[in-house]
Image (tube, rainbow, N blue to C red; front, side):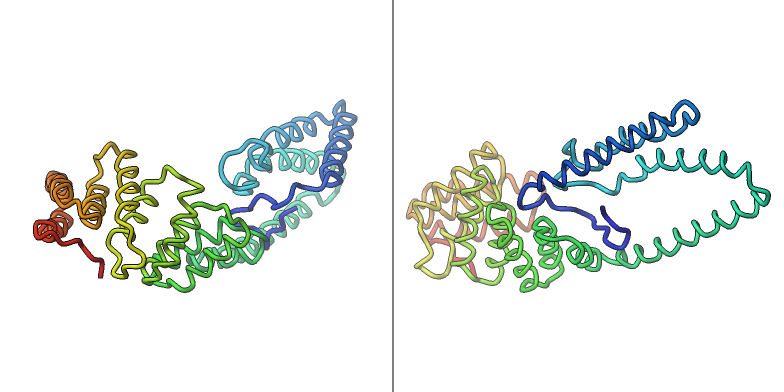
Length: 312
């Protein structure tokens, strides 16, 4: 059961499968409630209507039907809740007929319910005041939530908090070492911090897990082709990686061509570097990316002098 103060934007799949005893207990509880509802159906048909509504619309909430990376989605709870409200509303109407001060009691009950909803809403709104607060709350009320650690890391890096973002990516990978996107994000953050060894390591891990990612292939090739430190450069491997990246886009991504040109230059293949860089410049110009075209043109000048490009 998820309590109101423990609501999260995403619930992870359990690291281990749910214990069989939990599944059996839940099944028995549903079976008992269903049997009781069927028993009372003759006199109170609204119970069966509400219960069937609840069971039918509960499917997308509890994760039997996969609709995303989450284990369950309580944001859809309003749909199955309609069934419970049907049962409660008709039951209240039926049993309140025998009460003398019916209107007063129903009014007080409705008021108490509204106050509870207001307080619950107020508590939840505080968690939605900004993205950081929402991520932190969700992580505090869930366990092993590697997806949220990865997403929070991306948010932190995007807002300039690289070290904190890196920490979140590492937490994600400590839970799920096969999370290709977290390896990529961590590599990207380490690349920004000029930690080439770490960036190469995690780009390689991401590539092993997701071998058809243009971004991973392109970024790894870029480091191997342009890194200032010679011990991290590998022109032949950079060419192979850049070619694979370009093949994924049918050589229609100019940034991929820029990387391939740099790889050719690092491998000493300057005629191919010049030709490839010029193609990238032409593509940038056709799409009116003037700054990118100018940057590629400066690199082309180096290749015309038989000099490779170095990232600074």
